[in-house]
Structures are given as structure tokens and as C-alpha cells.
Image (cartoon, rainbow, N blue to C red; front, side, top):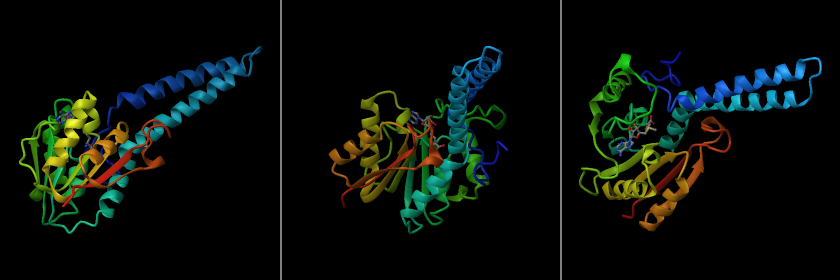
Length: 253
Ligand SMILES: C[S@@+](CC[C@H](N)C(=O)[O-])C[C@H]1O[C@@H](n2cnc3c(N)ncnc32)[C@H](O)[C@@H]1O
């Protein structure tokens, strides 16, 4: 079951798996304590409140699992579909981890090329020791999805890319920029993403935090058609308060 993510052939794991694990654990403790309090002979209604809060927290954990196992793939597929790609684009995926987004976009550019960049050391995904290091898992995933002929994974720092400027028709990022430790490094990563995009090329960035700042930075850099939108309940990473948000923009021609 863990192997299958929204019908995909690759293995992509669970993003930050300790989050839903802690949420579910706390939820079950709350529900157990609330149930015991409410059903004892001198029980009071406060116990039912505890059961209710526990149930909400369990719902948040289950929504997170749905988002990371299925929702994010569907949301990315919708967003990539809306870009109406020709199929011969050159694409960069910054913070590609195991290639979940890299392989989705590669399937849409049969005559193109997709480069995934990551440091891999800090991925925070479910440990895949049985399957090797994350960069090897990314390569295996590209094979499994049938896109290895157009995908390349290279180590690199996303706030200081080794690539020349004005190279890529499309730059994508799913959660990679948000993992950077400070507003300055996140701004540097946005600057780098815009620098390597060719004039007239597009950017599509998804994250659960900082997206308003991405919109501001892209606008400051003179990008056009800058917009953001929530991926909706399918991608609730902390209930309705923390949805995945997509930010898109175009570098001026
Ligand atoms: C949330 S994960 C990315 C998930 C991936 N895009 C996906 O959709 O499955 C964030 C990734 O950013 C990478 N990362 C963090 N800081 C980085 C940096 N300075 N340079 C390159 N990659 C970095 C981590 O190694 C991690 O794989």
C-alpha cells in the first residue's frame, strides 16, 4: 500500500512522516482520555469535548496522509496540464527529492529534458534505506515511470544554482524552497529560479508556507502574470489552515 502513490509506479514516500504520526498519536490519547472521562459513573460532558478534539486532530492527520500520498500528485497534474506544454521544453525542478514532480513533468515533455536538483542530505522524507539513498530512489523512480531517457538528477544548492542564466522554459519546485532556513535564502532561491528561466519562460512553485512572500519577490523581480491559488482540501497539510498553495509567474520576454 505504501508503495502506491495515486497510481504512480515510483516510490515517493511520505513527506515529514513524523507530523501525521505525532498528530495521530495525540489524537488517540485525547479520544481515549475523553472517552474514559465521559463514560465513568460521575462522568461529565468535558470528556466528549476531548473526544471531539481528538477526532478533529485524527482527521487532520488523515488529510495530511491523503495529501502526501495522493492529493499532491493530482494537484501537480492539474497545474502542469494547465500550462499546456508543447512537449519539447527544458525544465528544472528545484528541491526534487525523489522526483515526484520531476517525473510528472517529464511525462508531459516527451521530446524535452528535465533536470532535478537537490542536496538530498536533508530530504526529510520517509527513510528509504531498504531502497537506497534518495538520489538513487529518484533515478529508480524515473525508470519506473518510463521517463529516464529525458531526466537527469544532479546535486546542487537551490539558492546558488550552478546553471547559466536564461536556460529553462519552465522552473518548478514542490516544497523545496520552503525547506530553506531563512527568508534571505528563500529569496535567493526565488532569484535563482528566475535567473535560470529563459525570457518568456514560466515558473510554478508549490509550498504550504511563505507563498505570499514568493508572490512579492516574483513581482519585485518584474515577473508577469504572478498569481497564487490553494490546491484545496485534497492538499491539506494541516487541516484547512495549511493547504498547499501554487504560485505561478512568467519571466518577461
Ligand atoms: C519537501 S522536499 C521536496 C519534495 C519534492 N519536490 C516532492 O515533490 O516530492 C524538500 C527538498 O528540498 C531539498 N533541499 C533543502 N535545502 C536544499 C538546498 N539548499 N539545495 C537543494 N535542495 C535542498 C531537500 O533535500 C528536500 O529533498
